[in-house]
Amino acid sequence: MPPLGSLRPSPLVEQAITRLREQIAGGHWPVGSRLPGETTLAKELGIGRSTVREALRALAGAGLVKARQGAGVFVIATQPVADWPTRLRRAAVTDVYEVRMLVEVQAARLAALRRTEDDITAMRAALEGRRAAAEADDAAFIDADIALHAAVVAAARNPVLTDLFAEFAPVLREGLLGLLDLVDVRTDEPNHGDAAHAALVAAVEAMDAEEAARVAQAELQETLGRLLTRG
Image (cartoon, rainbow, N blue to C red):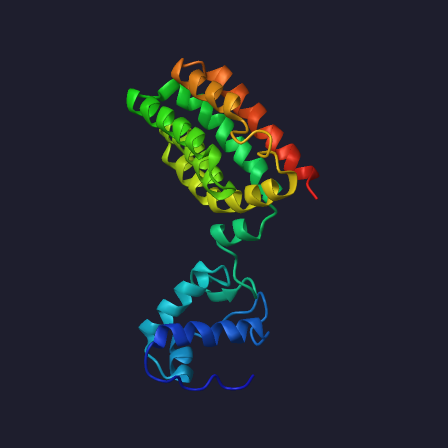
């Protein structure tokens, strides 16, 4: 194996991460092999052991290496694991939409059980916002639609569900824009889906958990069906 070569000053950690990743990706340290010790790496890279340690932590966080107590640091992959936002961007919109359904149907059920008066006010305002956007362009209408769904999810009072929906939103937006371009459902019905969304808000307000879940399931299933058959 060729020597690693000393690094230039600053930012040393980033340079160390890049150099070590290149060595791993290039097969100099195959999967299953043990990396040289911190002292050896520090000497070859011309940096301190603390910098090496920080670089190794970053590589571990990327899923490339793993420390084993008393044995050293071992290579477990040659390519970093994609983070959640990256995986969502790369996923098919239909796959994301299927997971969205799982999240939102449960969120609608929980929202009906947990909603406050402030939540109802927010959902009513979002429903009116969606109606107001009916005469706007597709992008504005989709943004208003997503805002209404976000208000329902927020009423579930579960921060994990809220965060998941926030991660889905950009991918959903792009997919729905593409869908409207293809099927043009708003030409004859600018406020497409208003009845279903009004029914969802009404069910949550009435604290009817099963009805809220049913309405959410039916509305999302219709859109998923369009996505699956588009093009």
